[in-house]
Image (cartoon, rainbow, N blue to C red; front, top):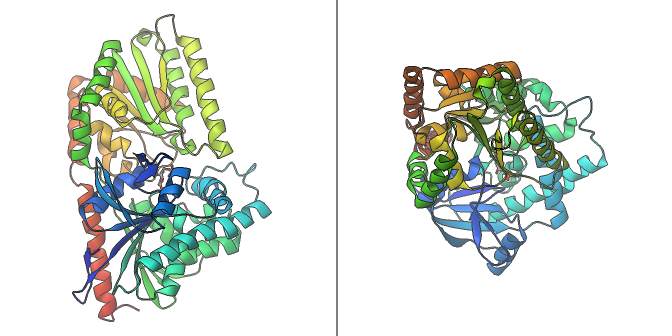
Length: 496
Ligand code: G6P
């Protein structure tokens, strides 16, 4: 398993570690692709280079598979390529506390400003114990596997991913001071006060873990900035804001931004597939004059309710659009063991029923809600929309905002929240919205559906050019180049 050249010219192993792996196994041994931006981001790296991807066994099927392979790495052949996967089984209760109490919702909510602080969260024994015996325990389980994987390897490089694994780097570093740790965080990093929700000890363990890395990466300059501010204000560390360096325990931690591009060739292939075309034919058969689209995980951060409320307002103000427009919302149920997510889905269904009841007619249903994860079905809708709403309250990057315009064939207009990572790159060509401003969002729906053909074309071209400028290979290369630069600097003694 070799991939990155060490500073001494020796080949070193490349190890990826994340909570969710590239595939999820069913008890019968069949598998489906892992969901979310993280898996999309790492697929190219893991299939095109020699790498071992260490992940949690998340399902009963994963656990069986891991036991069958005695916890060792094994090969999986998928339509996206061949992976070397190593699934780590944690104790059931520990995993439940890790995923359903700490990672989602506690950390996820802090990092998307989702807590309604006068009501929640309450930090009690349950949360403290979940951190100690759930979050840290699962991090230690994965860390032990990482340590085993790199045993005997000179200059190993480990790429750690996301908010599930903040305490893992410290465990790996303690066992292997020579390891190069690179941690990419796929979600926003919020400002210092958002982190004050956590008890000081918990917060400090998280920062100590993240600062055990050599490089910490984010999607945008603003998350990078927020992280640096946290290091200064919450941890009293010396920070170089311009250079993006945190000085800690005589070491330097580089803090960088690497905006994630989409794999546009892979998405184009999906767009051209037979199954996608079948879905498309069905959409065309049923289409009215205009289609508005949203595609999301059913996550609170995605702001689905305000999107529907804006559509409700738009229909109320513009009866001339009645019967002429359909809002297709393809939402993938997610994290359904977390009560906040169950309730959110119920609220979505209830609101859709209200809007459809208020404006619909016997043969026109204004909102068509599809609660499922079907890539081809979503891509078929991407090709056909006239306006796409991507209005998260806060979102690390949002790949839908990039995939939609890539394959859209109608010069569709993007209505894009200014609080998505993607907005840093696409804002110029989209109609920007403040995600909390329902009035503005409703006005933007009207503007998108009444925009001149010339302006639609100009914006659509701009979006297509922006989303094909780089691909995930470039994203990885930028990170590997920084890994080489920093390990070179460390060997040369220019950095502690
Ligand atoms: C986001 C996170 C990923 C996560 C994905 C899906 O993209 O950054 O780490 O995997 O959501 O969430 P899930 O909880 O289903 O893994």
